[in-house]
Image 1 (cartoon, rainbow, N blue to C red):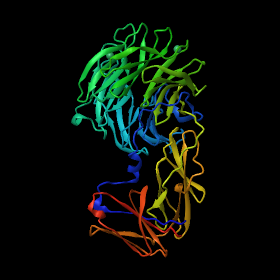
Image 2 (image 1 turned 90 degrees about the vertical axis):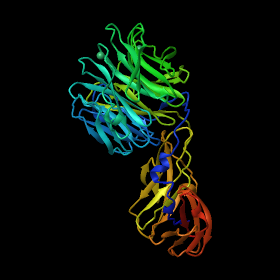
Image 3 (image 1 turned 30 degrees about the horizontal axis):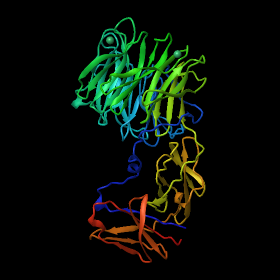
Amino acid sequence: MTVLRTFVRLLALLVLCVSAAGLWASTPAPDAVVICDYPQALASFQSFGSAIYAYSRAGVAWNGREYGMAYADQANVYFRRYYADGTPAAAARTVAVSGWTGGSLCTPILWTGTGYAIGYSTNYQVFLVVVDTNGNVVFGPTAASTNSSTWKGSVSLASSGTAIAAVWTDQRSGNYDIYATHFNLDATIGGSGAYHDIAVTTATNTQQYASVAWSPAGFYIVTWEDFRTGTKWEVYDARLSTNGAVMNETALVSSTGGSYKPRIVAVSGTFGLAWQDSRDGNYEIYFARLDSTAAKTGSDLRVTNNSSSSAVPDLVWTGGEYGLFWADNTSGTWEIYFQRVSAAGAVLGSPLQLMAGTGVTWPAAGFASHGYLVAASNQNGSYPGFLQPLGCYYPSTPPCPENALAYNISGTQATLAWLPVVDPYFDVAYYQVYRNNSLVTTTSSNVYTDTGLASGVTYGYSIRAVNANGQVSTACSTGSSVYVKANASLLLRVDKSTPDAALTWSDAGMNTYKVYRGTSPQVMQEIGATSGLLYEDPNVLTDAVLYFYTVDDPGQ
Ligand SMILES: [Ca+2]
Ligand SMILES: [Ca+2]
């Protein structure tokens, strides 16, 4: 069946702007995700970058259909897109020139709903830059501080949804302290430029490695490692209000040993905290839950129990449980380990070793809907970092893409769209678009414009989904396929001068034209058929809905 389709939008009723970007941006966020009992690496680890500074930490964030990763080498700060299976979706993009051969100690990244906010440092300054889904810089970079004369680094970011807090280590007092700046989502400084260089703590001796999370109660929690006692390291925290006030500075973890490198995550108004602790005679990973006031609930959970160093944790909340990552040199070289921790704060299953034999540390993980992507830097510096996807294994293939259709067809191009696939076991990594059985592209979007077509030629397209485990949807019905006859002559027009929409089109030499109407290109219903070149849709303009129309010929 050859299907010729074209669409128009009733511009007079442009109250709901359905665009290609809006189709996937409206995908609901995952909720209450508990991954399987035995997650595993879904693919071999692979390298990224070429000269990752030793002991720097990358950033990984999921935007609803793919990961965005930020990392720094000894020249630049980069952004790169990765599919859920860990394969790159595009080449790395340089988003900032650090200008410092030491590189940025860490490059946290978060998805704001419309773009990625990336934090980085350049020895004497901290910056925030916002890029779009392709890594094009759209806002910033904006300096976080008016002080550019003393060392700054180790940036952490958290977002309230309408603003972003950046916290960092700062040496302006002569020893290390924690400072913060509030940014708006466009990377301008909050409070009309006033909310910068907020001293979170200026206690004596060193405070460093801050980690920040947002509470929906209306404040940020900042944690850090602290040597104010001069005898042992403790984990401290303080609240940071949205107008720059600092409150409730307290010792959160004070063990018989030292407590280091805290990472805090927000959990529906409460928090999870992971850190590195030497109370057991060597470095072990610990975990604790915090209540809505950031007070610890229950006793500290010892996660690791080995004689080697277990260090530099990263903590992720999936919506249903915690994912805890850390570096461990139990094999004699540094490798990354993963441990599930329940919402109630109990260890689930056994730790999983990742990136065996690589000599990597400082893990940074992002969670999608069913799995993680974890990145780690090389312990030696001037070498690549490594990354690996992590998830569950089930012997299943993803569902087929449905409602495939084409629109905006001209003599040389056509736009294809299909409903996003929801795989119950894996994140969808990407879709394969085939033209006449030849792969023309892979994309994580559910819209693709194919160009270079020849007028008057019929093309057969089929769409396949590939999940994070590399499994491809097979044996799909015709809902995953569409035929396009590149033909500029079928031009659909709408007369909206009356409450009726009068559709007319040019003669494509067909016996029957079926008329479809819907509220999106993906959801259309046949509303009539005619052998002529006119169809009236009565009273459709009386409601405030944006309609899409298509006309096709089922007989070709
Ligand atoms: Ca200090
Ligand atoms: Ca240990």
